[in-house]
Image (tube, rainbow, N blue to C red; front, side, top):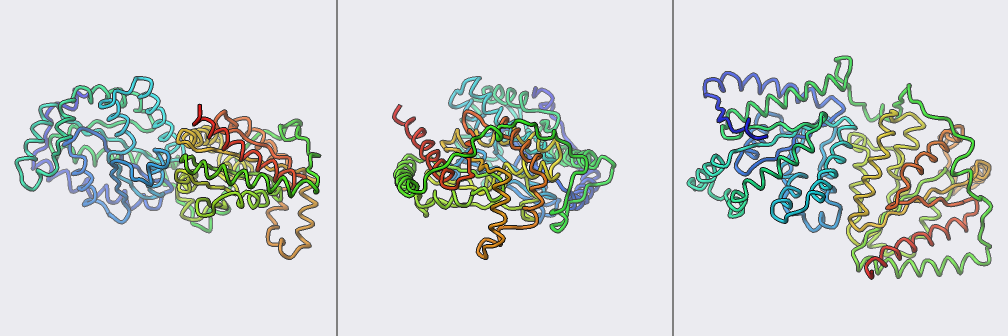
Length: 508
């Protein structure tokens, strides 16, 4: 694989002086145009030590406008990052639309290092690479351009590079003992890298292998490739040859996809099979509520001690009692270690990122609890029905969401998902009561009334959402919520059972 990157290619000073200035100008103009487009660019640098990764990033910062650049280099995870899933820190650092992000020693680094130094098996290595593919696919499916460069040096060229750096007092600090240790394992790194590149070089995010021995050659190679990839992506995104314009914050609220299509609600859905007459007698409610809140308090402390995190997501019909259920959970938690995140329409900042970004940023640290009042399922519910997302966007979201939740579970996070279900008749009665109560009138909007007209479409969307995303690791709990007391008790019981099940794994 790397034979073509060990040909000792060089660019003379004269050729560089002729080619670099116009290339720099075109790249800068393209960057300026990019700030008005609705996609970001991620430039990922991997490669052997000493192949010019950092130098190339620094040079591109000189060529481009640094105000619209993001640069991140990764080492050992911080304590904050170590308490979250591995990809959390990469989601957190993604560039918004219109900007270019440079990533060094990012998501490919640990899998390759573990393969070489810790001897991970083929199956383990492939599983890590599959997680990378899922991550990159989620981004590219959302329009993100990923440009991946592998900066290469042959074994002898790398040794010569290290010696040159060590001989110069100004650069000797850059060569560390671990660099020579890695050089001793050069063949092992080559084998691992070939496997990684072969598996993860896809049409939407291929690898570009760059010979890194000659600075002028690698500069023109990287800059030229980056320029062409951005231009090509711009054409693909626009379709008509005109660049797609990022919506303004004012426009973002009313975007619709006119050709959105979906199946009408079937006569029988999973929701239509629920027994909506279930209830809890008023006389029994207070005692059961107090007992469950005490049980949850004890379990949440045990989970904290065991560094088990909890993520609870609430979805449901308007006025179905999501807020009331959340308020009954709170007394069983330590307020210092828990938070409730209300999810509304995306802010202008959130709108410029992948839709999962705003949820990744709120993932709790080890032992803590985050409750989402509405969640990432908005992509396959309101965005699907109301036309905020294309059919392609919400169809691929099922796999993206399943992968997102699987990452949480693998990181010792209990994921609990509740659909609060009421009948259309019950919702109508609750709306009418809200109109008459001054302290609840603010909850009722014209949009709530309008959404009732889409009841069948939402029920079809919920049916498919549950079918596609109720997994072994993160099942949906359907709550019969016509009776508020019954709904609150069922939610608390389910939260307690989820924690007990996870804690029991520690004893087995």
